[in-house]
Image (tube, rainbow, N blue to C red; front, side, top):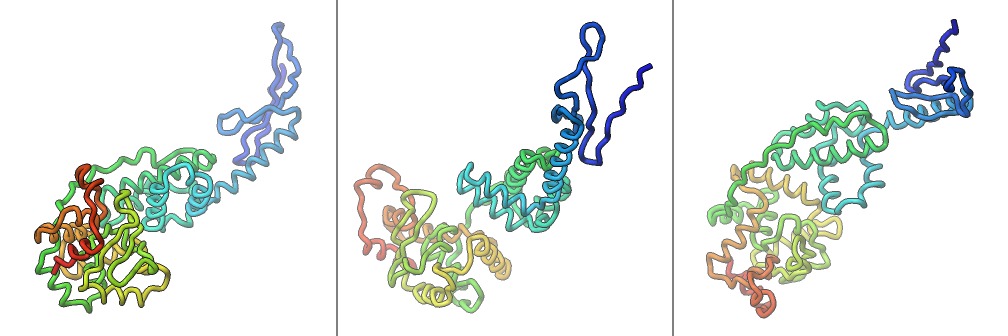
Length: 337
């Protein structure tokens, strides 16, 4: 009886190499051009003329994938930035960068292949984080998981089965009261109170203030690059007389070419810390709501307000035929007390 040929088992992680023979229709063995076959984890990896060729290919594969086995979360993120960032919108890339910096620090030095659902869930379920932010973190981690799968670093995408959270019920925006605004003016010695007042008296979007360049700040106005809409870009924003000194002080403390020494995420964090210290319930965007509401309360011209805050006009007349001078915008802001 012909003895069955034993397969040549390679070291762990390299698979199996063995010789495979075919039979003709008469049951006789025929010689294959490439009789040596390499299998790995149940997958056919290729055929080779000699056992040495098959084993060499298996060793090269194992060497390359050993390097990928050791790749850390941070290294994979760097690779993703190099190879995938150009395939999606800049806004999404910035969102991913934010989630990486803010929530993923516990994963930075861990080999990506070793990560399991609990590791991802610990990051996703960070304390004091909204469901919307959690869902954005899940999207970021899923993007990395897909990339790791493409590179054959992982065998299973663990983030795929993590369920998205229900959207938070939106809280109605509550403008700062006149009493709260007076309290802020009376306590300028508290850190970041000036920041809140600058926002309340300019109506800037939260993401716009950190981007204001020193070169664009003048005595009575500054030019903001703006965001979100065409109406908001490169617009004229009057400086209310009451906040001139606050802005001058910020300019004197500036370390780079922008008014603030930090980006939006840190500004939001500082704002929330201040609100907790004061025992108030406000979010950063309510500074802008306060500006618009206060001007409406004193009967300010709606088109002037739209120009200042960067809103698109309500109708064609507002958008095309209504023009306002810089002096009119200045006069509108000075209606605030």
